[in-house]
View 1: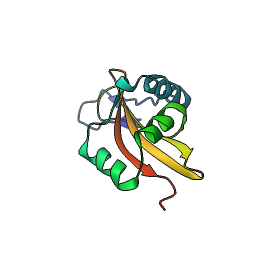
View 2: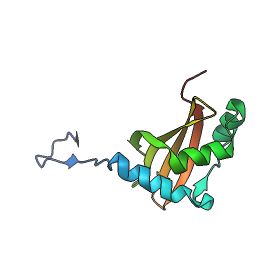
View 3: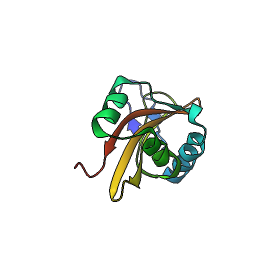
View 4: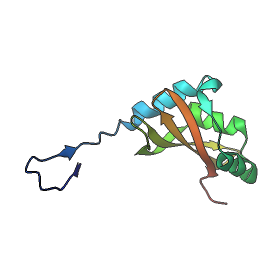
Length: 117
């Protein structure tokens, strides 16, 4: 809860309600079933994907069957920034930081190996 401070005697409180992670996880998995719902538009995410040897298949596997690790409010109203992780390539675990956009699509912000090898 964030409270504003001013000379106005009327209290103004803004409540930020985080969705339950399991609901976001389910929503991300469902949206990722249709690849047209997944946007990988940024130079940053594409560069990290090449640099780290993370394939599109790994990204979609993590989004479709992975587990949510972190949830934060996104920059826009109704947006949620989440990290989905999934074990791939034997013991390695891939992390896909994605933003669940209010228009029911996913924006891949970056990809990373969770074990930092």
